[in-house]
Each structure stands twice: as C-alpha cells, then as structure tokens.
Image 1: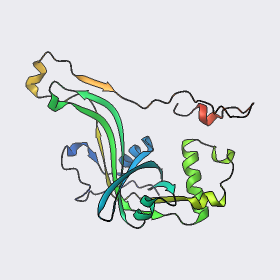
Image 2 (image 1 turned 90 degrees about the vertical axis):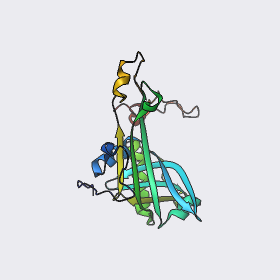
Image 3 (image 1 turned 180 degrees about the horizontal axis):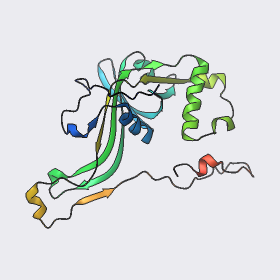
Image 4 (image 1 turned 120 degrees about the vertical axis):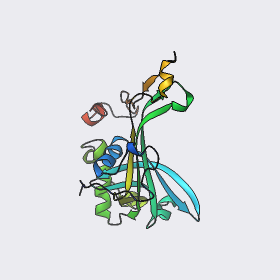
Length: 219
C-alpha cells in the first residue's frame, strides 16, 4: 500500500550537500518514479560495481523491473541489496560564472533488497500492470503470452522503504557581486517530447491506431 509517512534518512540516503533540495517522503519519491520509466540498477558482482539501465514501474509502495531470465544482472541481484536511480532533466542553468552553471532536475535514489516474482499468475499480473500502466487497455488487445515467453521473462522488485528525492528548480544562484556583470544568465528549459506515432509498415490493412497510442504523452 502507498505510504504517507515521512521516511527518516539513514547515513547512506541522507543528503549532505544542498540538503535543502532533498526529501524523504513517499510522495516525493513516487513523483519522480512516475515521471520517468527509465532507471539504472546499481549492484555488485564478485566485488565489482555494475549499473544497468532498464524500465521500472511502480505499484503502490513497490517498484518493479524486468528482463531476460538469463540476465546475469537479475540472477546476481536476487536477495541482494541494490540501488535504483531515476533522473529527469528539466533545464540547463546558465550562471554568470562557470561555478554557478547547473541543471534543473528531479531525481530519486532508492535502496533495498531485490526479490523475484516467482508465481506465474503474479508475474503475469505485474507484466500486465507494466503494459497497461503505459498504454491503458493494451494488454487485452495483445496475443496472450506463451508459457515459454513467461518462463523467459524475469520480474524483480523491491519495497520502497529507504531513499531520497532531490530537486533543483529556478534561476541560477550567483555570487551577489556578479549580478552587476553584463552577462546573460537564465534557464534553458528541457523536456521529453513524444512525436507522432509511426505505424509498422507491416500492419494489416484496415487496422486502426488505438486510442492509447494516439493519446500517449498528451496528458
């Protein structure tokens, strides 16, 4: 179930610099996770660090990701602590000195122990939630997954019980004396833009674009 309480930071999740930009409550973490499906999973294999980009989706107070059942990353993260990060770039910040150039962003860093969704029905439900979460109603339009496809797909998750969100917004913050300099400063806003869908040239004649495709990214 979603949590409304404020999560107390630990030594590894507490922001030490620009701590005023940090938040540890569930709502702040959820907002970043829901804004960008691309995440990076950090983990250790045989004492060596790795970071793998993948797609994540949130259900309540859990975050999930999936991949091939043969994936070394998924096999090695089972039952081990991982670090999941998501970042949204919102703008380039240009100051009056190189020191005060920055970016506006929203980020979340989560720590937890990865678990594997073993039950086939539960795994199917999680995959359905992923597809329908992005494209409402699409799962029921698709050819059903075969037993072999389900076996070849692994779904992992972790509970959202420790992490930190960090947000920077607004104009540059320059040294006070630099505001008198004749140098342009400001923000170049940045956003992810979805372009018109491109139909597969092998679509059958008469197959219409579903609403969840045409409306994707439009609010």
